[in-house]
Structure formats: structure tokens, C-alpha cells
Image 1 (spheres, rainbow, N blue to C red):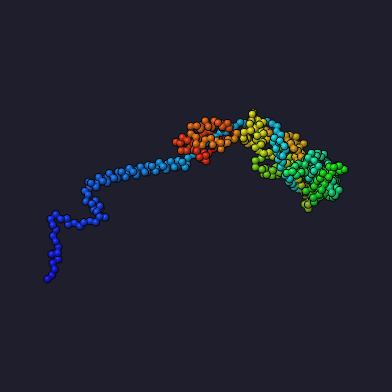
Image 2: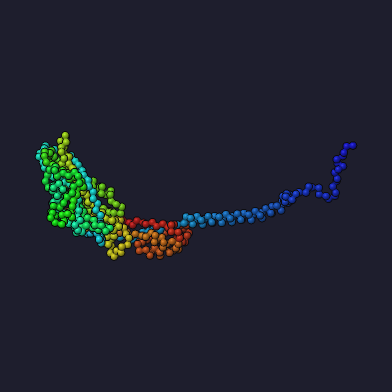
Length: 432
């Protein structure tokens, strides 16, 4: 007999809950499903409000913190300073300078020496018998004593080959000096010319010399000379004669061209921190060498020259000028604006032997604006970390500052940054 499956099903008792019982893990979510709508709305409303207020609080704190961080990172101060300045007029005021190395020099100078040569050709007007003397330079040395030795114009020098040469103009051979416990001879280079004309006086290799007038005295062996460059130009025979008018014009042009070349070279070689003036130079010219005419009938001319430029340490010159024009100047660091534009003129220029002189006098003319230097580091040190409202009181303690203003970032900050690297000093140019 077939089984009746419905017989195995027992009917529920009265009031019996026949729904399946949920497991513990899902029981909470099931209960939520049975909440009524009003109860669920109230729960969400109260909890959500509190969450939003907490989020807004965190956001506000983050913004404030970020602002503080940015303000710290980008905080700073810019101090614009106008230094004290004073303009005085130099009207050919006289100054004295001594050769560098001179003891107790008030204003030492250094001597820049340059040599150059320019050439030009001029037409000839035929030939004639000519005699020309060789010329060049000889360096003289003094090992006799520490006293300088004056040599008169045309002092004779005798070479090892017996030929006699004369110095051009008077000269002074410096005395010996001591350096590191070693005696150093005094030396000077002088222009010379041959006693007689002719090619036999030309010297192509280094040659030793003695001072002829010292022969028979202790000085003869203690003074010596040596040529370090050719002595040339000695000639005897027929030579093309340049046109006189063209020659006269060429001589002027050669000297002008050589002077300009030497001046340009000198200005390009001025060391940093030094000052040079056109008026502080002397150029000596050798005799123009006249060459042999070429096939076209033109005669080459050669003009050699030596340029001597007196240069001064800029800082020391500024202080010497300040002492001259500023009453009670106390050696406070200063600078003179446009000091290069002053005009210098050497006194008794025609009497100066540049290679020998130990002291020079000169005048300066022009407007000298003295500007007191501000010690940026000290200003920053004084301001760092101080209240902003004390700025003017602090600045008033600096005698080199005429006026100043400060800008602080962020603008609401009442304190100047304590970090010195965040304080910038800007020096304002004084009006001309």
C-alpha cells in the first residue's frame, strides 16, 4: 500500500510560531527588518546629526592646523633700509699715495706695466745714407745696500762685448730688501740707446752690463744689468727716406694708436677691488724705428711704448677720501657711489719716473656721495623674534640707517620671525 506522506506531518498546536528560528549571526538584521518606520527614522536622525557635527569639527580643526602650518612655513619679513648718505664736492683736492709695501703707507698703490708696439707704412721719397742707433731696455740690479741709487740721464752702461749704451732720462735703482730672512736686490728696468750708430750695437741674446762710472769703486761689482729683450735698430748705410709730411702725420697717429691700445689693455686687466683712472697713467715712447722700403716704395714705421698705470685698492681709497671730506669720520665702513667717475690728475707728471718713484701726489675732482654701509647680520640679529611694534625702536639704534620699513607675513603676525633666514634686508638706493 502506497505511503501517505501527509500522515507524517503533524499539525501545529494552537498559538505555536511555525516560522523558522534565525541563527544568532543574522538575528540583529532580522530584528531591524521588523522595526516600524517611525522608530527607524528617529534612530537615523539622532545618530546622523551627531556624525555630521563631528565631521565638521574635524574638518575645521584640519583647516586651522593647515593654516598654521602654512603660515609657519611661508612666514617671513622684508626690511627695506635707506642708509645714511652725504654728498661732497671734490675740487682738485690733493692726495698722497705710497708704493705698495712702503711702511706705514696711508694709501698704497700698485704699478701696472704694459708694453706694446704699433706699425704703419708711409711713402718714401728716395734713398740717402743714414746712421741710426740701436735701442732697447736693460734691467739694473742693486745688491750694494738698502739705499736707493740715483742715476743721472745718459749714465753709461758697458756690455760684456765692450759696447757702451746710455740710459734715457734719470732713474733710481731701489735698495735691497729683506723677505723671509733673505736679501732681495733692488731692481729697475730702464730704456737705453747705443753710444754710436751701427748694426754692431744690436743685441739679439741676453747680455750682462756694468755701470761704467762705478769702475774702481766697491759699487762696480754690486750693481749689474741684464738685457732681457733685443736691443735693435742700429743701422749704417743707404735707406729709403719717408716723405716728411707723411712721416710727421704718422708719428702722431702711431703714438695716439699705441696709447689707446695700451689704455684698453690696462682697463681689461684691473684686478677686482681696485680702481684705475686714465689720468693716473704715464706712457713712455721709444724712438720710432724706420725700416727698409718694400718693393712698392713704402717705408714701415714701428712705434714701441711702455705704459705705467697707478691703481688703488678701492676700499682704502674710499676711506682716505671720506677722511678728507667728512668731518669726524670714524672709519665706519662706507662706499663712495660712482667712485670711478672721479677725475684724477697726477701732480708734476713730467717729473715722475714711474718705475722708480716711491710716492706720488694727485688731485681728485667730482661729486663724491659717501654711503654708510649697513651691517645686515647685526640688523637681523637685533630684530629676530622681537614684537613687531618694537621695530622702529630697534632700528633707531643703528647710526648708519636713515630710515626703514618692515613687511611681515602673515600680515596678522605681531612678531618678527625668530628664524633669521626668514628675514630679508633690502638696501634702498639713495637718490642721486
